Length: 81
Image 1 (cartoon, rainbow, N blue to C red):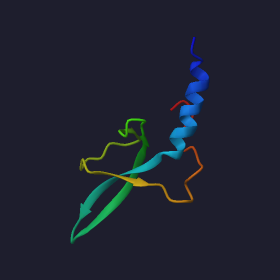
Image 2 (image 1 turned 180 degrees about the vertical axis):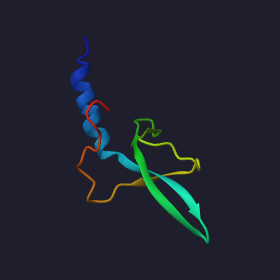
Image 3 (image 1 turned 90 degrees about the vertical axis):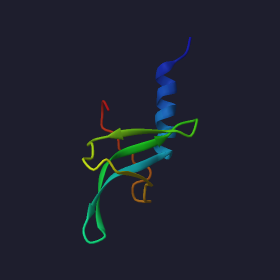
Image 4 (image 1 turned 120 degrees about the horizontal axis):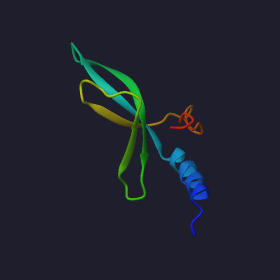
């Protein structure tokens, strides 16, 4: 029998290393844009991404970007989420 709790904890720690920020990009004239952080992304074992969004952008345009060095090491996930 598999210990799901232990595997889940290991996956969560591994995912924090693969965590990236997700931004909604809103185009603003002339040639400028506003970036709003709307969630995080995790790279899965097969190279695909899982997105956890706190908001859904109206524009439909998302950017996934590496986290900066100040954010690395923080879990960034709310309890129960």
